[in-house]
Length: 599
Image (cartoon, rainbow, N blue to C red):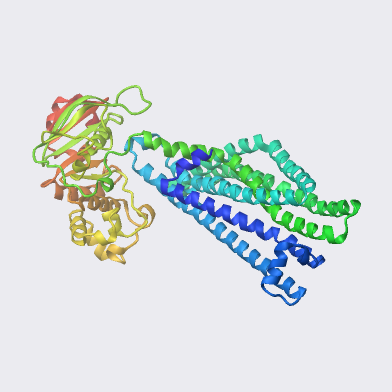
């Protein structure tokens, strides 16, 4: 398990962990020195004659020329107090370092996990539920940090303190020390042994119920309009309630188990002090003999009990949260083996667009989605000339969107080539090809942010080119609306998913976003299918403004939107079954004619 934790950390974080461990050892030594200093001090108070008998104390007494025993006792008391202050200060600094290290790992591991997720190829997300990914980043990383990494550090820290205290106790009074070890350690060990299996089972249940409650909450807010319209609030509340209840039940169980021994042990420990007194009385030792030992034992037990409780709680927490560590470790280490995203421009930096002056070719393209038997695209060949408008149409499942995703470089074909002006698109030049592309999907995702940030999407504020923003908005026929009707113009907050805007306005912001970088190729994937006829006409007016100087690749169900395209490809079951202009296909292609008739 320690190995898995270390594999979650970078080499630099591992070095900081080792330094922190060293500080814990030093802190533990000084803390035990502080505790051990209590007994000599109490011995001096009960029998000042020890000053004469003890060579070290006598040398200190004569070297500093103390005038009386009382002054020496005051000096000794102040020295013990200083040692305790230093000890507690160092313990505080160690705990501060421990807390900071743990919570900074919450930041760094969750950031690393988010980065790794985002750098995965588009294909990675096809079989992933985003609520689970969100849960891993925001919840499970926190569980691993607070439920495993922090307890491990505390076990190490408190274990050293406990070990040194026990060694000191054995030196002072072996029989009592070993008896205490058997009683205290045995009680905790028995409690853990009785609950070990249940902790593991409950931990797996916590992990699963946490996954389900994240899914339920995410789905409840996913389409709030439909939820309110259909009045199904109770359905989603119930879907959330069941896993939430299980999640709370599992967590409450481990909290109870972690605290149960504490109350029993306190009775045993402090009752044991009474037994120690009786032990000394029975053995016939006088007050001056057992009082320093009793004081030392009382102080040692006062410090030892929290340490042992920390150790037990940490062990229980680690056992309970092991499923989270296993899952997170698998997620992070698997990224080292899997292929990472081919085309994040952020990783490539600013790259020049790949020259595109003649044509784009797809040659013998075949593509199969994971866990499907039949290829979605089968041995497909086509050519798209620069500055032409090309459309793909066909029934649902024909492979139109898959073709668009292959052209966008989001999906890599299982076989075949994509060639631009005679240059094959590979992993090395994919980012350069994507610099030519603008993408307008059916559902435009808008951040709960300003219009300008939604148009520039992902560009830092100090790098935004306002002239390009306005130019893109004008071509998309949205500039006048922004300037005349929005209260803060381009700085207006559009709301979550653009809820304050109409469908047509959101779509035109999406077009402006696609145009901001002045791409030479625009890919429209059902970009107007969710709009009414009048709004669709307005949006396509904006698109027609672009068509003269761009290559348009349009995925469409509605044939009315592609009547003026230079070439229309008709697709059926992953193959092209027709190509030509609208009127030509109406006359010669049965599949196209059937689609037109239905519409």
